[in-house]
Amino acid sequence: MTIQRSTTQQAETSTTVEKKKISIFNALKEATKLGKPTIHSKDKHLKDIVHDMCFKKSKEEDFKAFYLVDLSHVKRQYLKWVGLMPRVRPFYAVKCNPDKNIIAVLKELGCGFDCASLNEIGLVLNMKGKTLNPNDDIIFANPCKQIDHIKYAKSQGVTHCTFDSSNELHKLSRTYPGAKVLLRLAVDDSKSICRFSSKFGVPFEDCEELIKLAKDLKLDLCGVSFHVGSGCTDANAFVNAVKDAKKII
Image 1 (cartoon, rainbow, N blue to C red):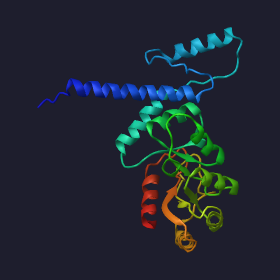
Image 2: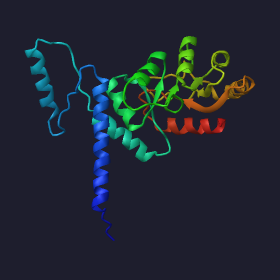
Image 3: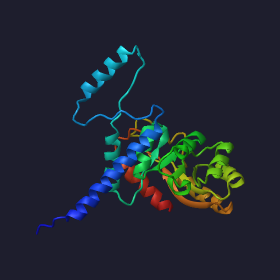
Image 4: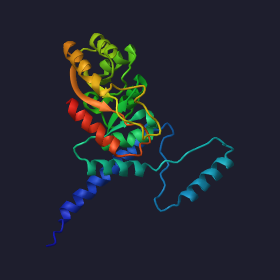
């Protein structure tokens, strides 16, 4: 059986795609101080783009370094994620690359944001373009936060925060009693290039005590977080971390 989309449906789909292209383009215009971003055709070879940039800069006697980013790849990776895991919403870790153009594209696509500081929260909230809902679209994923950063998050309506110690729970209880807290679990990151469990996270055997404290302090314990490290080479690290998180829940 062959099912062909009607002409009307084709036109509607084309219009939707075109609107998305325009919204991302406008987001990039707002994100950069240089005005209209330079967009190259996908048919143009990267080597030719670099050659033209070098020629232009040398002609203008501008010898500062520059870099090129394929923002269409950022979009493809996001769509690949939501296609393979439609029930799991990605939250982009701003600290890994706080470039405004990348954030603008992800913001228009509907991505959430993992922020580790006052500055990162301010960056994603103050950019023009699609309006974010701080309660749903941002998580303050720093288990050891400064009090003024917590107050700022509260003032902006960012409710989700991570913790990994009793001190952090008491700090949140005093400063932001309405916060929704997530326990940062220490997991096996031995197969990663950059490891974090030696600095952050609660060992599995100590979680029960902190969960009880969160309840005693009347904080809204709403989930578990973990970090298998950057440059992880073993997918089982994620599998085992999710299994441990499920046990806690």
